[in-house]
Picture 1: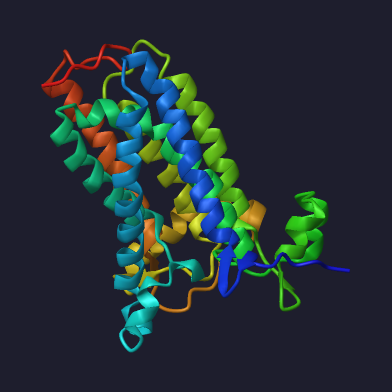
Picture 2: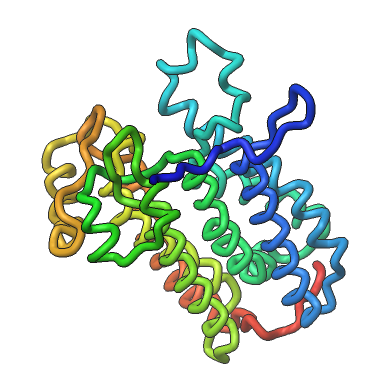
Length: 301
């Protein structure tokens, strides 16, 4: 017998408490604790990161929701109240990143500390939060990939029953893209842990590595999804994206069907972010050979 997890964890009177919100909250707390632990090496107080969380989380949620709504405006323009119903899903991580960066930049300016130095400390917290947060999509049975055979999940991937059952939506099994991304982010977290202990790493480069790692995984995993935000662009660009994604065919089969458009926005943005991060690393090193190292003390200006 297949058992599907109820997206509602429990109810208090008329108020339903969703797993989605609880998992996002847990992700934020885990990221906070990780940043506080690393911040102690630089004599940064726990209050510094707690205040950052109180600014960054609302900024990220607002950015994530506005980004999603912007590209799905036809679905919301006749029901504006639905815009604030984030418990039903519909948060775009690229939007969350934009919102969090804007909120953090303002906070760091007020605190008179370098954006890049604190961004480096927070990069593992960001990817940890994303790793945990994807399980909220699992609970909601959303952000999955295209249809697959049950045997692929049970025999090829050897997934446990609770994941296979949750990927059975109305009798059809789907790629657990939430899981693929969560595992990819776990590997990225370990990479950042190692990288920030290397003496050659300059300020900002842990953060840029996070951008590149997450974007690389997101590009390939996004191609499996069926709910991608998309747009209609030039055919040569769509063909180029398809060629880059082609290695995924060897393991995961065909790409997920797109409901509209010919270019997935998340894939396009991911490529831009990878190029941006690489260019920024080179420009900053050439422009300032004496950039502080990750391990250097953090000074206020």
